[in-house]
Length: 322
Image (cartoon, rainbow, N blue to C red):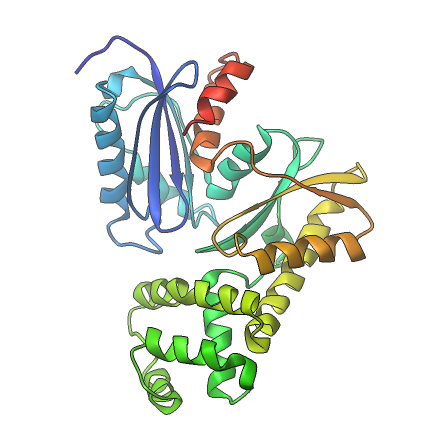
């Protein structure tokens, strides 16, 4: 392997995949790869997944671990000091002796969305978190207030199934009910009830993963007019809006940038619902913006900035290509 250039690693360990980009000091992408989940809360092979992704990305870039000058890793599930202990193991690779910055995956998402400037990211997909950096540079999570928006894909799925099993359905929901039964490979609601009596799926990780995969059925059904799906989505929208407003109250400005990230918020019903609710009920003006960079590019940007590299418009444009 060559040792002809200096590089940084950006790692996005959010959701069900680990994404790694190798970029030079001008932000040019040299390689990119994906492996399985990086959180041990989601995948028992998390350490292997991340290390394999790093080594594969370096190999594709034709560079060595000694070329790496800095690593920023955004890892899902870092909710306590104890979590950082297992997260450090993810990037403990022989020869990778450069500075390493490990943060929650919401941090790199915010970094990419707003180029490390103030703003709120609303993340809802495999997991759910609302994360902000205000004008004073303070990092704030809805978790800090013990507020949680049950908007992750698996929670939408759980709620829909609970409503189906309790009989709270009407003619607008029939297509969704049929799709749910098909998803679980059963023919009638009572068979689904029997699955529920057994806990659906024994392993917590596998159960959450499977329920998460069903989430798109719920958001699509809400788009199509299912009253059940809409009531479930509306509950999560309200929780998300409240979370945004709590964090927004920590900004001095009356105008606060907001970006949506994640598969659930890619749904037109969810995106429109949150935006309209924020506009109608909030005391501040929330400007909804498209993220400037992806989360993995946000991680690379943070690594470059932490190394005191000059960040230019060309750097940002190069990182946009990841």
